[in-house]
Amino acid sequence: MSTAPVQPNVGEAGAAAALPVRKRKMEDEDAVGVTAEKAAKLEQPAVAQATDEVKPAAQEDPKTKRGREIRLEQNRKAARESRRRKKVMIEELQRSVIFFSRANGTLKQQNDDLTRLMMQAQMQIAAIESHKESAASAPAAAAVPTPAPAKPEEAAKPAAAEAQKMEDNQQKAEQAQANAVATQAVYETKGYPAAAARAAAQAMTGTMESCTTGATMQAMANFQQAAAAAMQMAMGQMQNVPGVNMSQLAAAPAGTNAQQVSAK
Image 1: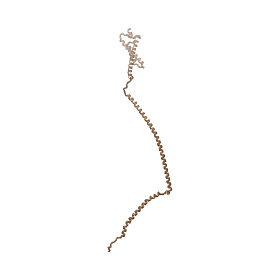
Image 2: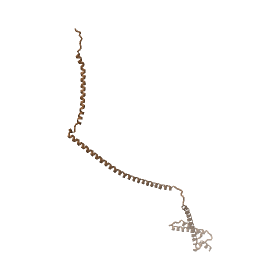
Image 3: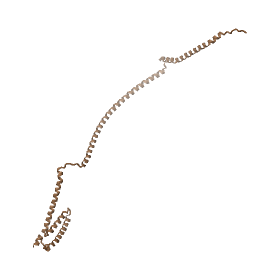
Image 4: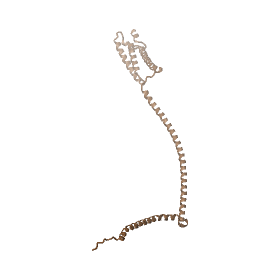
């Protein structure tokens, strides 16, 4: 049996050691390739867009060009219409401002006139109310008794009325006395005794004083009754007087009194 040492195979070991390095290199190349592809894909749309923009106008489609012109013309018409409407609106607003300014001026003038009239009415109402208050306070003041200086004529009126009344009473008394004297004289001239004539005169005077207008007949009837009663009373008194003949008194002629008859 041999004991010779086993020498390793250098070629196989080198190949095994070189394998990982190649693998890493391939992986790096793959990664670089992927990155380049991605960059190319990302750059393709930009390049295509730039190519479209740089495309000359001669290469455009006639339909597209016509549509673009139509749209531009429509936009210009719309802009002109918008400017026209804006101008019309501004003119209408200006006319409205002028109209409302004039209307506001007219309303302001009317408001001033109404304010002036209202102030005048308030002044008149205040004057009327003050006049009413003064008129209402005047009766109240008149109802309160206030000492007022008496006029000479008013002060003299009561004294004059009292004096006139006293004078009238005195005249009535004098007239009644004169009537009584005259009545007594009339009866004495008819031949009645003095006492009977005096009683008849007093009765007649009292009856006449109590008479009123419209009662003359009743007064005369009362007078006759009073005269008859006075004569009866006088004749009854004279019967008790000694030396008096009642038959002679009854037969005494007219125009003689009882003293003349008794003297005969």
